[in-house]
Amino acid sequence: MRIDIITLFPDIALAPLSESIIQRARQNGLVDIHAHPLRDWATGKHRKTDEYLCGGGQGMLLMPGPLFAAVEDLKRDDTRVILMTPQGAPFQQSDAQRLSTSTHLMILCGHYEGVDHRVIDALVDEEISIGDYVLTNGAIAAAVITDAIVRLIPGALGDARSPVDESFTNPNMLEAPAYTKPNEFRGMHVPEVLLSGDHGKIEAWKKDQALKRTQKNRPDLLDR
Ligand code: ADE
Image (cartoon, rainbow, N blue to C red; front, side):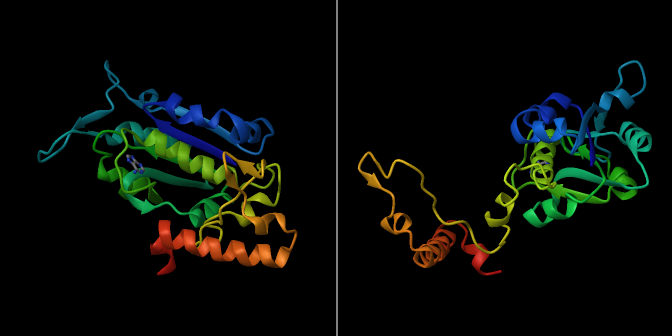
């Protein structure tokens, strides 16, 4: 898979993708990630990328010219073009799974008030939001979805089993609480059942605890 991130802040996008599991996936050739400064496609003396809104309104928008030039330069037949924006569809684990089988993703990062809408109409296959809050720029959001996508590429996680059990693989239930050694820490004990060796009992306990945790933290999941 190849991922091209187009942003005013390539370093912000790349920093979280240059350590640990994602860095190893890159070194092992599972994914080829590039972050490009949008300014590379800007023209004129000042290489301007943003402008005031037509019709008035607060803030600035990314102009269409540099984004069209970037996409036209990097797009291939198999490219899926994504725009990071708080106006996008909320990103879910199922989207990470779907996109992890892509061969080329181009991720456009909004800044200021977003992008000229002609970019969305003409270039973008899907608009994605990582949550109902506004970040200073889409590069942070691009790093988030890239991480979630790349870790699902077969071989990216050392233990091939690990993506299976986790929360959101069953999208309607969170994971049960988990414990490690020591069995007693500052007077707090690992639940007895987990030390019992009775796998039937352990599974039943995990199911019950997962339900309780979901009721407490994400009751919306149980209504789906
Ligand atoms: N850009 C700014 N905020 C964002 C969000 N919540 N999701 C995606 N892109 C963004």
